[in-house]
Length: 616
Figure 1: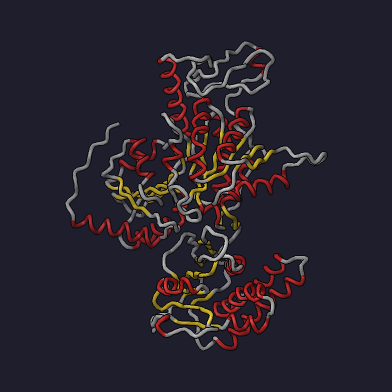
Figure 2 (figure 1 turned 30 degrees about the horizontal axis):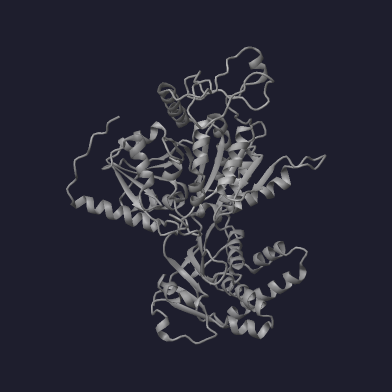
């Protein structure tokens, strides 16, 4: 039987039972490899219940630095009888199956082309520990120790991680180190006859990069971006944004002399109340945000429409998950694009920012607060569960102390005193953005009535058709102004001239980066453009029109980004080829390569339909 052999280039998947304490042990495994200077990209795939259902933790080890899911698994650590058959099927031919051999398994449970490594984990724990909870928890540490021996992970690195985790808790430290060595010693003495071809070797490939999840990064971006109000309601997978913001504020947002907090965090009774509080705070001049997911956005839409029409700065961090309805609360998708781009009834269009990793979550969260103030409108940061709840290697965050917040057109007391005309909803600069005042700016000037009904440019109630048309056309002009303010696309040319292009965005990026190289090696070079903001800059339609076919890779069923491209840019539908992945797991490089290759090969033998002329 062949044996998979690779150094610093493999995928290992842990199959556990939720609530068994495996998550911390699996994370320890990934961090140990990272500490050896080898890039890793772990992903936690967990159920929406608290305990009992299956959970998986997939670790991509890649000295090359690929951070997306590859597709396929080289070793499975099978700790869950419920998912045994599916887990075994997933192993690549010549790969490895590590399992608890305390109870004998029938021969039919195994595959003839996979190397089986059995270790009596339960028996060892039962013989060593009397407490049932210790038996369960230390079983996880035992298999980490065994894997360290089999794969070549340095035990000292793991021990150092334990020392950091249990600093000041020597009893816990000693017991975990003991369990680690139980696993190491057993593997050294009993498992050497079945050598594993997957190895970890120390390198220096991590550099200065940091290891952080997107939700924490977005929360820190809100702190640096000047947010002083957060109103939220708990919902997976966004809750940790507000929790991290609270943690950072306790550290950085208290007056050093008085100790007083200069922030307000409110866990509201529901999503409707939270967006109402954020809207009120934005109207009052505070930088305010909420964090939610798809179902929360659905509940918030009426207030979002009010903020859009009354022109109030609001920042919404949408950590997307599988929908509709409750959907898949602990699975990832990019399925809120249309619901956020056009949130609320009537004609609305909202600014969307599309971060690809935690670094951009940090940057885009801070930028969203600037854009919301400058444009006087709701701004969405469209992250998702894959970025938000999984730790990812990324470049260090950057911030300069001389950076100034962009508060936009806020009329001051001095300007009002000098006689500057205040017309709350009048476009005086040609960019669609009016001047506003904050409450109590002047004792007698600059006041206006904020309403969600139609008004004239001076904020006076009006049902006159011309006043309504003027206002909504001005809002369109403001949206057009935003094209140059949102993060611009990142274009990447193929190594040689090609008629094929690809558009992608967000958490698809790391898998797309790898897929582009694999496709080029297979004779399918692609020009690529990563979208980073909506409304789309002019460069996006230019990119589309420069190619005969453009693949649009996204993680939803209906091709929502493709729909936005057609709707907003009048792009030719025949040019835009959808590549859709929506099973709730993060997209893989293998999926992208196979989907695009199939299309290209089919197009080589099929007659090409006539291309429709684009009408601008």
